[in-house]
Length: 374
Image (tube, rainbow, N blue to C red):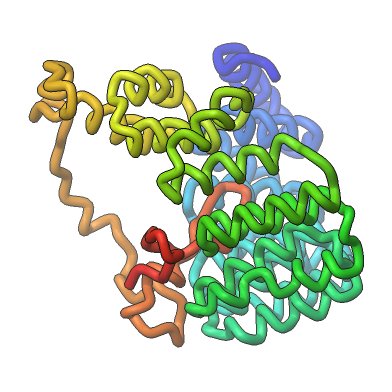
């Protein structure tokens, strides 16, 4: 990908070219691509909309315009552009998916739109997961889980489907049922290492240390010794306060390219009351997606060490208070319709640029297992 500076310069030239030839669909699409790749949507949206309206019958341009509006969080405009694109290209699954997804992000019912998109691509995994999230958003968790379970009977190797089923069960407060589909899949394919790894990943969220260790033993007996199994054992032994046992595995298991496991190592060092190691191991993680938690662990270590850097981290210069009330949507938009507000932590959806995803509810940790945090 070209640099942001080169992208800006290229965009400027393309905008000048489009201004001279507003019906140039190829240039208009180039503008949209550059804007979406480099975050220049605000600079490009007006020119692209003018060309889309002038050309009129280009579904691709209306789709690109919708994506620009979506990136700018102009939801109504994005939906309208996707609808225009869908009318022009009713069999384009990407446009149908975009319309369903953007409608879902807006907090509107979207199951019917996903159903329409799935008629074009019945086994599209992203569409199936999106439909599940849309059902959850409309308060139909049981239906969402049942639909996924039925699909997984015929497609037991669909790992994303197993994870989505487990998340929904956890959101329902039925964490004990989170691995039902994986148990069924493992009965059919007991030597599949990917299924065992998925099983362990879900147990790490909802299981007990003992259940994880038991599953690790079974996985090794069926599929051999794999790094994923060692990582699961290390984390489980740490949670079970088997410090020495966890130490031995952490010391011989490479965390390169796995920030989540590296963070688990930091958490283990904190549990073992080794603040110097916590600080050392957490520092490189402050530049990863685990940065927020890594900084929290460093702060804890500095507090334990009476390190003066804690004063810097917690100084008033590092903290600000901002009133954003006028920028927030109505509070009832922050939870799916039909869900009891007391369960809000279990039902909130994370909205990403890539889409709306089902998320794990917050679970309180305990040596006897985990339970839903109310």
